[in-house]
Figure 1 (spheres, rainbow, N blue to C red):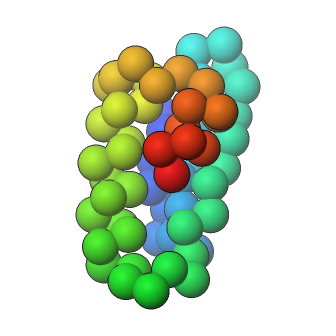
Figure 2: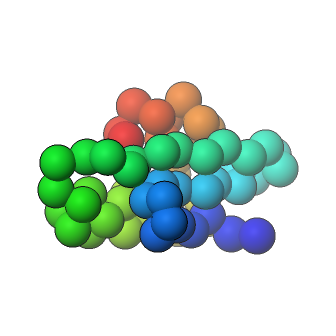
Length: 62
Protein backbone atom coordinates (compact mmCIF):
# COMPACT_ATOMS: atom_id res chain seq x y z
CA UNK A 1 0.00 0.00 0.00
CA UNK A 2 1.50 3.34 -0.97
CA UNK A 3 1.41 6.45 1.15
CA UNK A 4 -2.01 8.08 0.95
CA UNK A 5 -4.23 10.78 2.40
CA UNK A 6 -7.19 9.43 4.36
CA UNK A 7 -10.37 11.49 4.53
CA UNK A 8 -12.29 10.03 7.46
CA UNK A 9 -10.60 10.97 9.71
CA UNK A 10 -8.21 13.26 7.89
CA UNK A 11 -4.66 11.99 8.06
CA UNK A 12 -1.73 10.38 6.30
CA UNK A 13 -1.05 6.67 6.10
CA UNK A 14 2.60 6.08 5.15
CA UNK A 15 4.69 3.11 4.03
CA UNK A 16 8.45 3.71 3.93
CA UNK A 17 11.18 1.99 1.90
CA UNK A 18 12.14 -0.31 4.80
CA UNK A 19 8.54 -1.55 5.04
CA UNK A 20 7.75 0.36 8.22
CA UNK A 21 4.41 2.13 8.47
CA UNK A 22 3.14 5.23 10.24
CA UNK A 23 -0.13 7.10 10.47
CA UNK A 24 -0.55 10.80 11.19
CA UNK A 25 -3.81 12.24 12.48
CA UNK A 26 -4.72 15.62 10.99
CA UNK A 27 -8.36 15.63 12.12
CA UNK A 28 -9.72 18.44 14.26
CA UNK A 29 -7.62 21.22 12.76
CA UNK A 30 -9.33 24.62 12.45
CA UNK A 31 -9.37 24.61 8.62
CA UNK A 32 -9.95 21.07 7.29
CA UNK A 33 -9.88 22.13 3.63
CA UNK A 34 -6.46 23.77 4.02
CA UNK A 35 -5.21 20.83 6.11
CA UNK A 36 -6.20 18.39 3.34
CA UNK A 37 -4.53 20.52 0.65
CA UNK A 38 -1.33 20.65 2.72
CA UNK A 39 -1.52 16.88 3.34
CA UNK A 40 -1.70 16.28 -0.42
CA UNK A 41 1.40 18.46 -0.85
CA UNK A 42 3.19 16.62 1.95
CA UNK A 43 2.35 13.34 0.24
CA UNK A 44 4.58 14.40 -2.66
CA UNK A 45 7.56 14.75 -0.27
CA UNK A 46 7.20 11.22 1.12
CA UNK A 47 8.87 8.11 -0.34
CA UNK A 48 8.54 7.00 -3.16
CA UNK A 49 7.71 10.47 -4.57
CA UNK A 50 10.22 12.42 -2.50
CA UNK A 51 13.04 12.07 -0.02
CA UNK A 52 11.11 11.94 3.30
CA UNK A 53 11.60 8.31 4.24
CA UNK A 54 11.00 7.99 7.97
CA UNK A 55 8.18 8.58 10.43
CA UNK A 56 10.28 11.18 12.27
CA UNK A 57 10.80 13.27 9.15
CA UNK A 58 7.14 13.16 8.19
CA UNK A 59 6.13 13.96 11.79
CA UNK A 60 8.35 17.06 11.71
CA UNK A 61 6.64 18.25 8.52
CA UNK A 62 3.15 17.40 9.78
